[in-house]
Length: 527
Image (tube, rainbow, N blue to C red):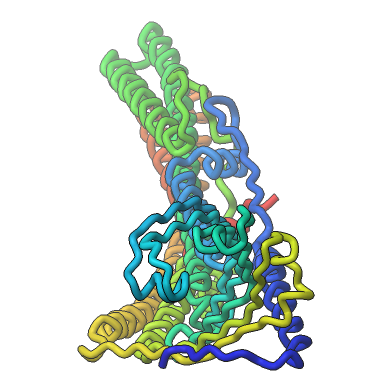
């Protein structure tokens, strides 16, 4: 239905003034309200990475969180998501528009037009018009879905008709200022629909933050593993060096015994062969330490000299817990803290908002259109713009516009099917992740219990083997023991100690995996 214009009585002036003032107030206040909802700027603190020296695990984690390329990429994704929020919020930003036009019109008139313009007996046959048109307005979208526009126009014009009638060159000035409101009543109506895209952008931003934390947790877990591997490699190298020194002592004793005729030369050969194996094991341990160090450097996103001792793990391998964790408590902690689960829940909320918006788009478009304005006309520009004069010449219109797709709105129906499928997929993803979380936690708890038990057993073996080695060394010093027995005891003691340290490392890794599975790993390293 097209709007029907009518002239109200002068008694409507107060209502018109009130409507105009309210409309302009909405245009000014709305952007302030939107800006008030903006989140505070995100502050980030970066810690420079280090390439050498003795580093604690906390120092390594802080450096990795600052220098990891994967973490930096996720932070950039978060910035992109934040920009998308600002872009979605921008639709509520008021828009100012202005224009000016200079025009000249010269055309021939028909006899009928001459009659209406100049009267009987005048056959001018020509119509000329010079004009200058100016307009300025402010428009904005408000949360109800309404588009509100306040606009003022001024047209200055002079025709050959008015010039001939007045015998002067005065321009006529026609002014208009008013407000137009277009309020959807079905499709695109209501704050829930109008702010849907903004809400989805905010949920995407929150999900990007959770994704960034999830990546950060994964990288930190990898860094912890690399640090523990480096600590174990250092212990291996220390044990290998201890073997070499012990072998050198046994070699000196063997040479002394051979010179004194107390041992055959074959026994010296056994010691020399053992010492060669010890040197080879020490070289291999040094290479493993170098590999572990460079792996950690890669995670730190730095490079440095490869000489021994350039980067060392300063923290000793952590002790085992006296109280082992339970799977039930761990699963509950994980459900509350896992960032990837939080991200999927945000994704489900986003798809719910999208689904609600898609359902709204199935409705026909029914818009209420209303306008209120005032007109002015005078040869004086100031009098044409004078509100006191123009309020005597108000005009308003109100009507309804309806738009219905004749093909059944296939686009909206397709969008609805897609939204339903995405929401179902989001729900299933949450369920699958909760199952995976429960299994991850249970596996990590089992690894901790198993590693703790193995560490306890290998510790007992290492203590017994060390006691046997001490006994054989004492007997060798007294000249009563066999050198071969000392070498065998040394290798057994070293192997038992390595097994104990390996199980201690496995326990520490399982502890890291449990914290990662529970979503509490980053909490370990909070300032």
